[in-house]
Amino acid sequence: MNYEQMNNNKLQLTGIISKEPVYSHEVFGEGFFETEITVPRLSDQTDTIPVTISDRLISQNGIEVGDKVSVVGQFRSYNKLEGERSRLLLTAFVRDVVSEDEIQNPNQIDICGYICKQPVYRTTPFKREICDVLLAVNRAYNKSDYIPCILWGRNARFVQSLPVGTKISVSGRIQSRKYVKNLGDDKSEERVAYEVSVSKVTLEKDEHGKQAL
Image (cartoon, rainbow, N blue to C red; front, top):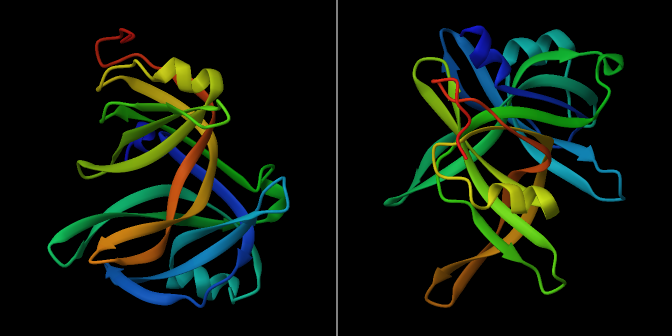
């Protein structure tokens, strides 16, 4: 992984391990587990974020449910087949466990990628401006992570007309949001969506050194 790939997707989280780690998969002899970290917001609410962490980091740091941990890594996506459909799932991939003193913000993410779907701009009944953007973020081995982002106010107005392929950098936090999925035949289920709530957005130069507007 080169310098750009390391720096176009960075996150840091501090929170409580709220789910027993469950074995997921193995890569080059290293086992990986899925768990969750519950991170406080500035309000009284929390975000519960899915996490993928190696068995080595779990054993080295003695991580158990209820422990407070600080981690750094990347926000990644993968597709999971459910029947005949593919569903985009998101996880915080942990590269290292660090001391709490090393992290200033308990929930911070910085990513740089390309708009890969036309932004969707809308207003709420209370006239709040919102824009949904899907970013394709390059990763090693010719892979990409597809990260949903939500922008507000002037940031929403700024990105709403940007064309597909525009390169932008965003900073913010990962948030979890519950919603009800209609499954048809009068069936539905509650699900949780994860997205980057953006506080700052910057237009980046493309591979030709130009800014696309």
